[in-house]
Image (cartoon, rainbow, N blue to C red):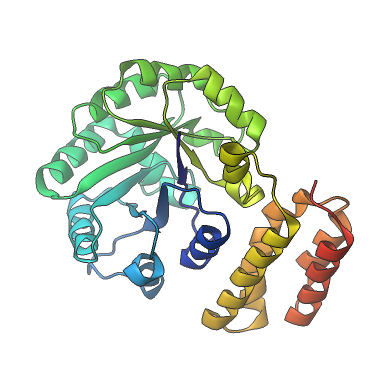
Amino acid sequence: MRFYFAPLEGISGYIYRNAYHTYFGEIDKYFIPFIMPNQFGHLSSKEKNDILPEHNEGMTAVPQILTNSADDFIRTARKLKTYGYREVNLNLGCPSRTVVTKGRGSGFLAFPDKLDHFLEEIFSAADIRISIKTRIGKESPEEFDHLLEIYQKYPLAELIIHPRLQTDIYKNTPDWEVFGRAVGSCGCNICYNGDIFSVQDYRRFEEAFPDVGCVMLGRGILSNPGLVCEIKNHTPLEKSTLKAFHDRIYVDYQKVLSGDRTILFKMKELWFYMAPLFTNYEKYAKKIRKSEKLTVYEKAVEALFSEQEIV
């Protein structure tokens, strides 16, 4: 089984990816959170930092592009190729309202004819491998049969399917029936994404889809950075490893960000996912969430690690 790390905007940037790769690894591809092309064709400083080869050493990284403009996609893909990338990923999965209302991400799925024309243009012009990360539709699972027909017209490097609708956001449960139909009919490589948070979740998926050789994890890794190691090597997450992982991220954020508030915002995002890893975590999570100074934050984190155990 191959394991991919999902692109999580604002969280899984190069600082998180490098710390994760150092302490956990076991990931076959890291997908870089989306680049949103602008009319001038320039990468923002944040986007450039994320895709710089020196910030992705030792790992296979794939940048993701979020756009509904073929010209912008082609221009950005060509620029990424100059950085040494041989594959880019098209984001047709983001369910965010601000993205969807502009007809991007999973909002693009509501316009299959425009999407078909877009794909025809980018596959005709781009001299780079293109994979797609998609949801199964905007409002109805019946949309996916037509979308799949469109995808199969093009030489996709891979189709990553999150079997939820845009309107689901992250509610309800992934539609394994629709995913199963895609597995049975799609001629390209397929990767599954959605709601694998534990070894048990993974085993259930593996039993249901033994012929699917690739899984993408996002929130599952944020909630338990040791999850892939547990699945592959049967090694439980060690508290000392999690502490070293946390400390690396914390120190590295302090090197590139200024101001307690900015650094704490990034760390609090991580603890939203990681805190339930510990026994009796609630009061510590509350202290972390309310901290406004790094010194207060550090004391709360130190107390959590020293006084509680990983579940």
